[in-house]
Image (tube, rainbow, N blue to C red; front, side):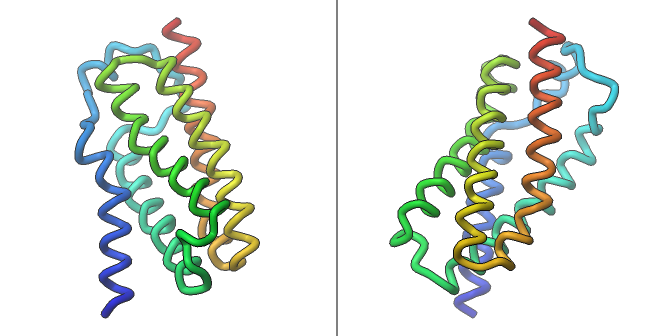
Amino acid sequence: MKKIFYFIFILLLWLLGSLLFKYDPVYYELLNTPSYIINPTLNSIIWIILYFTITTSIIIVKDKRNIIGNNDYFFILIINYLANMIFPLMFYNLKSPFLGFIMNTIVLISTFYLLLESKKIDKRSFYVLIPYFIYTIYLFIISLSIWIMNF
């Protein structure tokens, strides 16, 4: 029962950013976007799946170690989390493709390091994060493209 509570709590924390800062379809339609971009509905579904994988990875690590006591893992996790939460604020609310690109860059770098730290603790946690890392690479490319196309 405790594990289910932790899972739901962590998942809700990850969903918080999308609840606080909404997707702005009017602004998004005004942007020049590359042809290889995924439609917003599919993107939302992918993010929900990724939030489940991220939460699963965190639970695996939590079962092995005290997350807060592991300074490297905890620090990178917090940076990754905050960058994810701040991205919609920067991109949609402040209407800044450049700041969105900066936040995506931070997400990509911190996801890479999160993978490395997770692998040190439990390889299952590492494998669960691989789709997240792949998607952050894709989003980095999209974000860079949007910034360049709207500069």
